[in-house]
Each structure stands twice: as structure tokens, then as C-alpha cells.
Length: 227
Image (cartoon, rainbow, N blue to C red; front, top):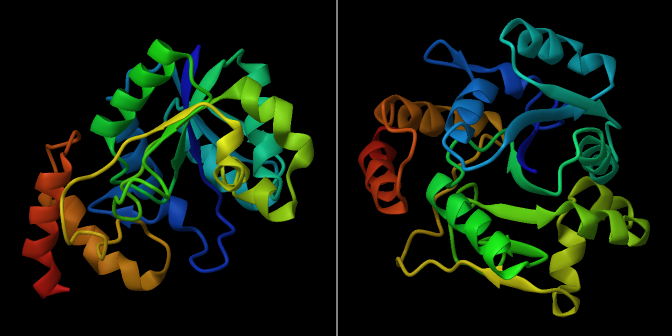
């Protein structure tokens, strides 16, 4: 089984509570979830923590019949692995809950490549020349299980970083971008200063859950002067 794991928590140090921050009447996590519904996966889960700060998030998810899993707050890699074990997930799409413009198109392509060539992972992060937040990462759960014991504290939080640091040891594919002059755009809600830009982009993309990089780049150029 392949699943989309959306990682979210309420205790972000730079933007507390952003998972439930509303944009045009819809919480951020729901924007991300609705986009994930267009992925070629068997299951979509919100992967959050057992910390009491995430009770309010889980209450919201339960009321909206959205499947979720709770694990360690800081050891995100262990949380992901436990989730995969609990639901018998063989490979997973890693999606940050603060990235409402993760690439559906590239992720579906990555899923296909992972299956076809039996790879450890497929990514457009680090080497793909895509804007921050327009990401896709598809990983084998067995790979995470095999190497988790080697992770340092930082790698336990940023669960795919270990594999990029040791990339020559793995079978992988990098999806690359050929568009120019787009790296300056950031499609993630990292801090409060990102709110205006993300809000305008979401408003202008309503009705377009599967949006290409060309389209997103043009939208960005349209709204940026207003921010």
C-alpha cells in the first residue's frame, strides 16, 4: 500500500497553530488534504503527535472524518515509521502540512517511477531546482525502517535529510525542473509574513486543485505586487 502522510502539528515555534489557520474559511490542513485527494495513493493520513497541543487538531480531523495517526512530537521519523507499520504502508508520500502547493503532478509522476523501477525514493527536493514548498518526496517505508537507527536528532525531525546526505548509497530518481528564475518563490506557510502571499495564491487558485508549475508561477507574478 502507498499512502500520503501529511505531517502537521500545532506547536510550531515560528507560527503556532498554523495547521488550523483559516484561509477563506478553510483551515490550512484542509487545503493540503484536499490537494492530496488528487494523488494516486491508497490512503491519506494526517501524521501528528500525541502531545496535548495537538488534541485540538485531532478533534477537528475526527469531526471531519479525516484519518490521522499520533506519535512522538519530536521524533518525526519514528512517528512516520509507526504509522506505516500500523497501516501496513509499504511506501509513502511525505507532505508538509504547511505546504498547500505541493506538486500533485510531480508527486504522481514520482509514485509511478518508484513503482516501475523499484526505487528507494523519488524526489524533486535538493537537486530538482524547484521552488521551496512545491515539493514531492516518495519513499520506501522499508528504507526508513532499515536506516532510522542511524539518524541523529536533526534527522529524526527532518526525516528525509539522512538519505540526501548519504545519497550515493541508495537507488533514487530526481525529478528536475527546467523553468528559469522561479527559485525565489516560496510556497509554504513558515512564518506569519507568508500569510498574505499564500492567502492570495489560494484565493486565485480556487477550483484548480491540480496546478502546474507554469500556472503557479504566473499566479505568483500576478499576486506578488499586491503583497
